[in-house]
Figure 1 (cartoon, rainbow, N blue to C red):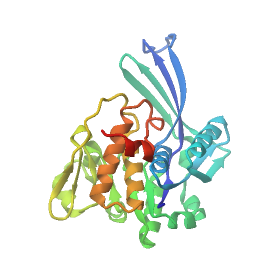
Figure 2: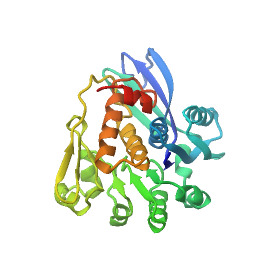
Figure 3: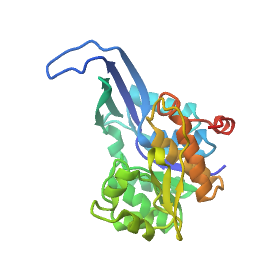
Length: 294
């Protein structure tokens, strides 16, 4: 079983549903309230674990009930939580999500996620360097992401970088990552909005793996552009589909798949996930994916 070490965010999503969105100064009665484990890092660690990787989470939570909830949830799906630090100064990261009138409004408080720093990366250096793939996102300080990329590059450890939320990436970040998984919108941002994306992709064969939603996944293999088609499924909830794809891609790669087959595996996992409700709850296990003909 290959090892995926995730360095990233851990959140708890507080989801309110209502028929009416409150205006400024207004109070309305809602319908439901849910506490849901989230954060791109935690989501991807869960996906990797469910799909057959030895999954390890490095991140921070606060000394609060949300932190306990997040860690308990990761433990329940066999993600190693030994390297999650509890910080006293700030709370666990949260997202306040209001779902009303067929749309949502979200306020994210990064909280303890912004306590992931270079000193923490040094503290868990041996764990990071033991990985077959390190999985990174951009919901922790960019300095820590860059530091981790440098560490892994200098020690020949592969890194899969999911550049979300998207910012323009430095040339060193692009060079140091083994794989980068933006969607179409993120690709323009990470490379610079005025660039020719196809020409840029040709500079980085087998690195820029661009998810296109229902159109599939596109990458340049060094000779030609390849388009891996998506699966046609009945959509129930797209929340977490991108995180499922990234976790599944990492799991497949560390367990010996070549890149094209790993992308096909990740596509299938992401497709399965959108037929179910919830981000982490909709992520398939390896057994479910093998037995599901979609």
